[in-house]
Amino acid sequence: MSVYSVTNNSNPVFQPKGGKQMDQSDFMRLMTAQLSQQDPFNPVDNQQMVAQMAQFSSLAGISETNTALAKISEQLTAQTQLLKDIKAATPAPTPTTQEG
Image (cartoon, rainbow, N blue to C red; front, side, top):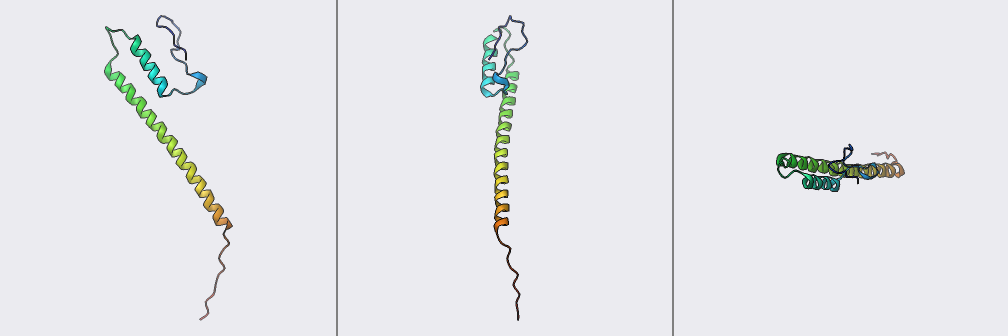
């Protein structure tokens, strides 16, 4: 993780390792760094901070939902394939005639 000082004019403030997407721990590190570096006479707006946390929480929930739905989809695909295999392995019933 690269964090540059406040006086450094380099553009990137944070670079995740290996090009991965940022997760909740990265967000917490950024928020902690932001709070520790803020001007005490001009603090960060509380509403903005809460809005950012709510957005991240919502995004985390959506990601968890997507993961759960992907697992459900995989299970349904496997069950469908199993049913197809069972149907293919089951011999067709022979027609019977009723004499009466």
